[in-house]
Amino acid sequence: MSPLEHVLDKARWAPSGDNVQTWRFEKIADDAFIVHAFDTRDTVVYDFDGRPSQIALGALLENISLAATEQGMQAEISRIGEPEIAGNSEAVAYSVKLLREAGCVPHPLAAMIEKRSVQRRALSVFDISEQHRTLLEQAVGDDFSVKWFSGWQEKCRIAGLLWQNARIRLTMPEAFPVHKKVIDWGKQFSPDRIPDQAIGMDKLGLSLMRWAMHSWQRVNFMNRYMAGTWLPRIQLDLVPALFCGAHFMIVARKKPGTTEDFIAAGRALQRFWLTATQLGIQLQPEMTPLIFNWHVNAGRSCSKAAHIWPAMQGLQTKLVQLVGGANLRNACFMGRIGYGKPASARSLRLPLRDLQFAPDVKKTEGA
Image (cartoon, rainbow, N blue to C red):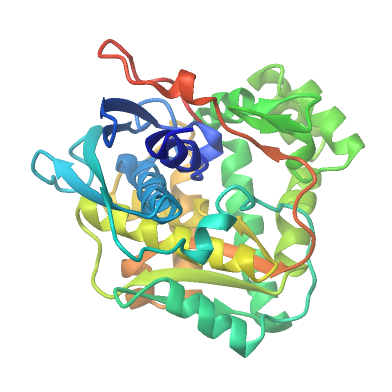
C-alpha cells in the first residue's frame, strides 16, 4: 500500500452522521489528492445547514493529518475556493499534499483511528478521573473547551432533557425516512449504515421497531395507542443517560459562524474521541438537542406537525437552564462518555474504490 493509499484508508474511518460518509477522494498525483465533501441538508432533517456534515469533514481532515505521520509525512491541507458563511454552501473541497518530513514520528492517536467507535449501551457510572479529564480537555486545543456534566443530579437532568428530545425525534414525520433508511437489519456490522445490533435495544425492542418502521402509519399507530415512544426512549435515551461516567459539551472560544469554524470543531472532536479511545473510554454522540436548538435560534421549523415547534422551544429552554446561554451559543458537540468495553457491533466503512470521486456523482441521501 502506497503512502497515499494508507492515508486515504485511515481517513475513511472518520465518523459521520449515521455513517453516511459524505466525502469522495480524487487522486491528483502519487502524493496529492482532493477531498470532495457534501452535506445532506436536503434529505436529512438533522443536518441543519450542513453543520453536522462539516463537523464530520473536520474529523476526516484530522484523520488525514494523523495518518500521514505514520508514513513519516506531513499533510498540507488547504481549502479550495473561498470560505462561506455556514449554511450557504452544500459542497466544499480540500487539497491535500503529502510532504516528507525528516524526523517525523507516528502520532500516538493515529493507532486509534480504526478502533474508535460508538457505544450506545450502558457504561460504568464511575466518573471520569481528573487525570483523564485533563487529557481530554487538552486534546481539543486552545480554541475549544469542554464542559462536563457528572454526578447523579446532573445525569438525571440530562436524562430528562434527552427523554423530552427523544419524543420530538420519534413523533416527527420528517425524521421517519431518516430513521428507516439508516438501520441495517439483522447485522452486526454495516459498511454504510448502522447495524441493528449496534443501536442499543434488546431483541424485543428491535422486533417491535422493525415492525413499526415498515411505515409512518404503523409508527403513528404505536405512538398514539400503544405508548410507542416509551420503550425506545427508555432503552436508547434514559438508561444510557444515567449509566455513563459523564456527559460533555465541546464549546468554542468564539461563536462558530462559518463552515471553517465547524470543520475546526470536527478536528477538535476527533482528537477528543481518539484520546478517549486511547484511555479506554467509550463515547456516544448526543447531538439532536443541539441541532434542534439551532433550528429554534434560526426561527425555522423542521416539521409540518404542529406539536413539534413548541416542543423544540421547550427543549431549548431546558437546555439553556442546563448549560447556560453563553455555552449554548458556542456549543459545537454534545455526547456522553464512560469506562467500559467497546461495542461488539458497529458501523464499518465503504471500501476506497467506492469512495472515489466522479464528476457526475450526486449527493446521496443520508441519515
